[in-house]
Image (cartoon, rainbow, N blue to C red; front, side, top):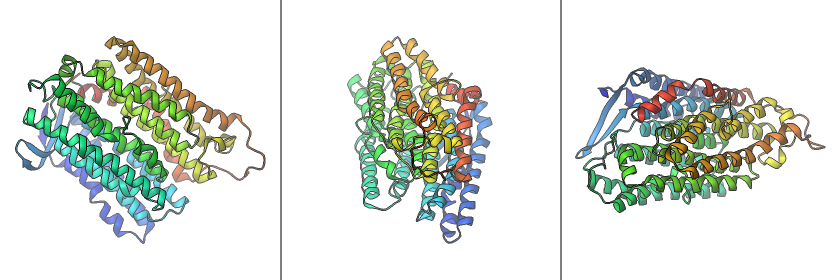
Length: 489
């Protein structure tokens, strides 16, 4: 691959980072503040999309910010895998920004300026992770994301929000410093570099299988944003945040940054051949499989809609890691493709959860009887999002899950086939009853009859992401091509 030296990868990061300044300056002018937010979000999508044709044609971009460690510069590089993630994140951030305006205004939330500014910094960090050329750069942006999302998690500033914020930072910073950082040091000592390489930089390092296994486990749990058990507790706790934050955490950035970081380690630090040689794929698939099944079972018991969605996310994230751990072409492609499919489906579900709360003041599943008759658009969109997460055609989630099923067969590990099919049944068991209650059970006697759809700024984004989840079943060619290019296909 030929990389052009260009400042545009840096501009993709800076447009929202610098955009936080006019957002802060517009504190007393809500209309102007929100205009800045949408303008910056649109500019982010345009800049990222402008890099796409070159990447699809087999090229890329590189930009060096500084070199502070020998052979390990703070460097940006736009390749197929980074473009895949950046494209998903930037598109969905625009929808989240639009949704946030309607949600925050409808509930008259406090400190909206800080909220939108924190969002802008967080999406900058996310694109930074996507466009990182090596582990050091990725780690720096990973930590930047952790710190910039803390004000979002603790937004309400009450005792519960502060407690959840502390738990969030304890898990995320504790694991990254305690596990990921030592793994990086060991990697640097063995390889002499931290650059991402198609064949993996640890190949030929001479490290023993035990040492390689230790480094792998440290990375898997060190990037705890991926929600692998037992380092998943921060994720349900973070549901105390406003719903657009939950959507951002689960669909756009934080959890996907964790998965993306782990996939970078699997593909470009270890490499498929090395993982096969020392039989470490089974370590990845075992941890992911346990997380998938346990999280799905816990989701069944949650009455709070956002908490059910949170445990669903924990399981779905591990689908992506499970696919990568299969070390087969179909499995790895499906795992990477599931980043996009899950992102559009899950953000739709969170948008719907927020719309239900705005319009009806309800957040528990047991309270949603008959609401589908009052809010048909919202609950139809919820149904589409749920179908995609379950993996039912004709939704995008079917495509990625189908490829992982093929990957499980190709790997000869039929137990993984059982895990995938069982978990999809569990997905159906915790989503379909919500749809049934909303449409088929009558509205309780004495229920407020004036319930109607949420404001337009909330309704339009959830409709668009739901339609996108459907469209991705038919039109996923760009994401599939990027995924195949990322894996050297």
